[in-house]
Length: 148
Image 1 (cartoon, one colour):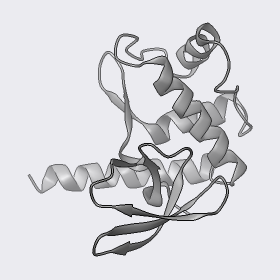
Image 2 (image 1 turned 120 degrees about the horizontal axis):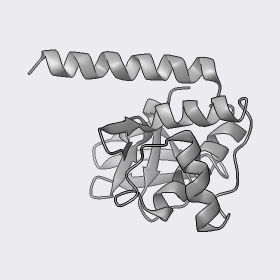
Image 3 (image 1 turned 90 degrees about the vertical axis):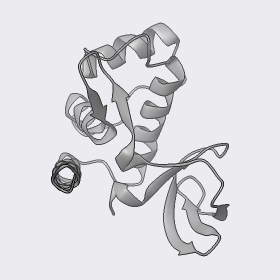
């Protein structure tokens, strides 16, 4: 399964798998408990494939960060998102040394680590799968750039 169909819904814990689009929104299934929810068009929803983290030079896509974590942890789980803020920032600095400390908040780091561990538990995280995701994102960006 692709990260292109994984959603973060504002106000709802965890991540969701997009199942069906409807006229009034869509149906998504929770990766935490498997329950299906309906989400209206006015809800604040983000696709994981579109999320990026600020660095001092550019924005780094979430899939690249997941790949860095997977490499560091040998495709295993990472530290808990419930660790103290100093530990979280130090860990994040190891995987993304140039992240913009003024624009990347502790809550952002907690979300990234929590999402990584959730995706790992569901079998989404492997270096091979993340390589495929990264290449697909680069091709989509090039296609979008060419159409301008």
